[in-house]
Structure formats: structure tokens, C-alpha cells
Image (cartoon, rainbow, N blue to C red):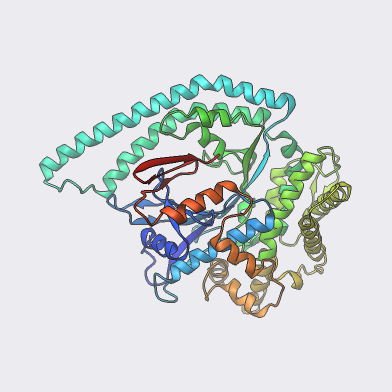
Length: 539
């Protein structure tokens, strides 16, 4: 799971986060090391990573204007394990920021929208079957046909970047002669212009690859999941929605779900906002420098990771746990019983947009048999299908039954709201959009303005003593989903069943603070031991 956190300063809104100082504080909490390929990404000894999104260098120095701090958990084998690591990384980030400034001066915001309506938030990734049978053969055959275009792309990109580097070097030398600037100073705006030229060329050469991979995905990839689970994802927002208040003061269950416009695709190109996001597949083919046969061969695997990009970044333990847990169960359902009888809505994207704005839970949408369904009705059918799957399984995990029980608990109380559609009191503090709606009901009694409501929306997600969610939890007594023991274990240790995270953690603890010159990326690590260079590949 990847989670983005916005930075907010109460002293000066224009002051950016000093990411270098921030990571120095993180290293005091848990050992970490920067990536050799990306100096703005750090590997932690507990298996997670910290990075920035949307930042820019200041004169080439390590100080970075970070738009978002992003955390990524290690690979986890169960929903509870994943949520423990996600919360542990969040606690580390909050603790590191507190050590940088005085109390109340700045904070992190784990939200989904800023004051201008721009979206950010959270992505989950799951290991799934790319295709089977004839579809898998078609997927691989299309990849073979893409090989000449891939080689041409990497060749043209390398020449383009080399040409830009030569032109930039010549231009800067001439500029220094006539302006008498120092050799090391490069104006920030000037460096951005050269980077813009690099990006323009790479994007231009990349366009044919994007189109070919998009066609391959549309024809062959993830068909059982797209066919069976689109209805589930169209209605999942009633469980994991974080709520949103638009410029007119209207309340939505989920802003991110309301902006989804396709079932599968690339979220980084055009205005595409898919349910199944395949950007990582595109990066495997296009990331440089140079063409990698290893990454290309990896695309032929029958199982790969796919992102689900419609989930809200919420603060309620139960909502976050259910989001990952029920999605894992329905993926298992689609793989074990692809012929299960579940609703198949006519237009799942239109249904998703409708349910994301239906906080009263009254909207109905048609399926292919012209039956009309509410969001909770669809979720109940999937819950029943999962229950049948677990009953027929030879040995279902205990956690699967716990997830199913809590899923049914949430659905039962969502359906129990009265004719006035007041938020179910027992779900306050458990489901984010219900909690936010409950706070909003108290504001309505005071005839609050739209600005006050939108302030509530932003301050709800603030990770500080001033955050509205924290204040609600101070007065609402509900059992915790995540144990303190699990959080403490996740703060300092990698998952016991992930050998890559264990190996990476060992190297970071042993060599990050020595003269071994440890360098690490996602696939490899190298360091000096007794004067000899040692290399290992994580596989």
C-alpha cells in the first residue's frame, strides 16, 4: 500500500518541507538508506520506503520542496499485516515531523483532496493472474511483437537525453562566460526548462509503447476480474469512502471514486482514472537507462501486481482494514469460482460515480438482467458469495472469517439508517465517511457556512492534536482493530515471511552507518567488505 501525506505549516503556508531534515529525523527512529537509483527514495529497516512526490530540487542541493511525502509498505501476506505496516510508517512520519518543529507549527495531512480540489491519497496493490489459457498466449505474443518498438524507444530516448545534456552543457558554459556566474550555480527555473525538454522527448517517444501496451491490456489482461468484480468495486466506496465536501457544500461518499472514468488503464497518461491501474507494467518496459532484458522477461509472468486506484485514504481502523480485507477475499473468489452468481451492472463506471455521491444510500442502478441494485445490496451478495467460498474451502484462515464478520457488521448498520438517512451511530469512528457526516450534522445545527464545512473536510485528516478525527476518537469508545504489539513489531522489523525485506533490513542495519558505502535499489545491493566489493540481487 502506498499512502501520500500533504505537508501543512501553520506558521507560513509557503514554507516547504525540508525533506532532507525530515529523513534525518526518520533515521533516528529506524535505520534507513537512500536508493542508489533515486536519491529521493529511502529504504527503511522495517521493509517500508519513504519518498517524495511532486518535488523539485533547489539549486541541485538535497533540500527538496516536497509536495507529498509518500510511504510504501513492504510486501505483506495478510490484510492485518499490511495495515499494521501502513500505520507504523504513518506513526514514524508523524514522530519525525514533531521532532523538527515546535508543537502545532506544522503537520501532515492524510487526505484525498487539497483546498483546490486536486486529488492524492492511497493505492493498494495485489498479486493477481494477468491472464490464463488463450488470453495468456495472446498477452505474451503481443509482448513479443512489441520488442522492436521497445528497442527503438530506448535507443531514441538515450540519444535524445544525450543531445539535451550536450546542449545544456554548452549553453551553461556560454552563459557563465557572459554573466560571470559561479561554476556551481544553476538557476532553478533554468534547470526546470531543461528537465521539461527531457520529459517532452521521452513522452513523445513513449507514446507508441503506451498505445501498444494499452491495446494488449484491453484485449487480454485481467478479464476474469474485470468481468466479475467491476460491480464490487463500483460499490466498495460505502465501506472505504472517506467523505468529501465540494465547493457547493454537497457531501459525497468518495471524491476519488466519483472521478473514476474507466475500468482499466494507465493513471499517468491523459485524463485516465481507472479502477485497475497498470502503470507499474508500463514502467517495467520503459524505465531506464537502457533496455533491460530482465524486466522484459518479467512481463511474461502469469502473475503480476496490479494497483487498485479508487480507494480513499482514511483514518478509521476498521474502514482501512475492510478495504484491503474484502478486496483480497473477492480476488480469491474470482480465482477460485469465476462462475459465481453475483450482480453484473450494465455500466459499472457510471454506477461507481453515482454511488460515490449517494450518501443517503438510496440510489439504484440496473444490471444486465434489468434488475436494479443499491450499493449495499451488491455488497451483501458478494459477502454471501465469499461466505459460501469459505464454507467450501478445506481450511480457510481465521482472519478471513473475522474480515467477513466485520464486513457484514458494517453492511447491516449501513442498512439500518432511518428514513432521515442519519449516519448510523455505531459506525462513527469505524467508517470515515460516516464519521465525517456525523461531525457535519453537528455543524448544520450551528448553520455553518460552506467554508466551515470544507475546513472540516481538510482538518478531519490532519495528523495532529488539532485534527478533527483525533478529537472524535477521544470521545467515541470503540475497540481497536490494530493491536499496539503489532504496531511496535512493524515499526522496527520486516515481515517474517518476506525474504527480500529481511535481507534488505539486515544490510541496512549492518552497513548503513559504516564505511562500507552501502548502495541499494529495489533489485540489488552492493557494499565493500574487507576491501572487496560485494553484490547481491534480491530475487
